[in-house]
Length: 259
Ligand SMILES: *[C@@H]1O[C@H](CO)[C@@H](O)[C@H](O)[C@H]1NC(C)=O
Ligand SMILES: *[C@@H]1O[C@H](CO)[C@@H](O)[C@H](O)[C@H]1NC(C)=O
Ligand SMILES: *[C@@H]1O[C@H](CO)[C@@H](O)[C@H](O)[C@H]1NC(C)=O
Ligand SMILES: *[C@@H]1O[C@H](CO)[C@@H](O)[C@H](O)[C@H]1NC(C)=O
Image (cartoon, rainbow, N blue to C red; front, side):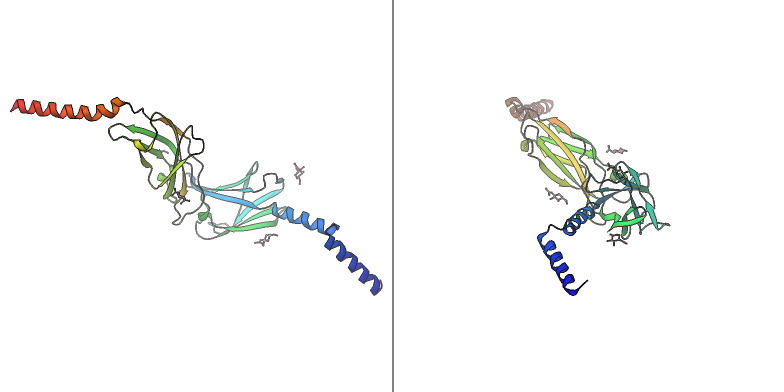
């Protein structure tokens, strides 16, 4: 090829690249999109099955064809260098006692044994607690309040014990008008005068690690509990105090008579 020919070729190539209509540019875009497709997210659940921990990863793109793709974790493991994930439909998971819970691991996505993408992460920073359960609300007539209680499996755990619980409640007819309260215990009192009388309420709870050592994500919501607040009748407004006064007078009267 002559120098002139090479120069023409280059100019032609440059024109094509600038116009964005060449096969090269299209291929480039296509490849970028393919690479992005392999991004993934993981979360851990510690001591979910006795002393076994669970690590779950999924591709961010739910439509990815994952037929020949594998996940592997290496580093920060007890006794072994790497572990291969099991696959259940679109979810990749490992249940094991072998997480050191100190230091970073590398997660690999592999196609026919070859690393196609990888990510460094720390098992203790991606903890998703188990959802709280057994949410209950008891009306305490004398105190004019509601006692909210719930349970969490994390009370029985050795590692992720300290959680922040978010209690969310709403009047059922107010679709998205949730009131949220954060707490570290599994008990909360709601004052009766802060709620509408004679109304249906829905209440639910979720948990997140309190970020001392273990960090991560919100749990799923607990199942909801539904309750109705009592009516405020003139009777209940007046009868309570009036009844107390009468009883006190009566007691005094009886005492006085005994003297
Ligand atoms: C996914 O990929 C595998 C092999 O790479 C192929 O056999 C299969 O037909 C593909 N599935 C879909 C739904 O494209
Ligand atoms: C795995 O492959 C990806 C993409 O090819 C690369 O960016 C990454 O550095 C590799 N990771 C390791 C630890 O080899
Ligand atoms: C919480 O649930 C555990 C079982 O998961 C149970 O053993 C425990 O008694 C429950 N605690 C309360 C206060 O209900
Ligand atoms: C509750 O705690 C979470 C996590 O610590 C925080 O993101 C949220 O803003 C808090 N909500 C309230 C109402 O304080």
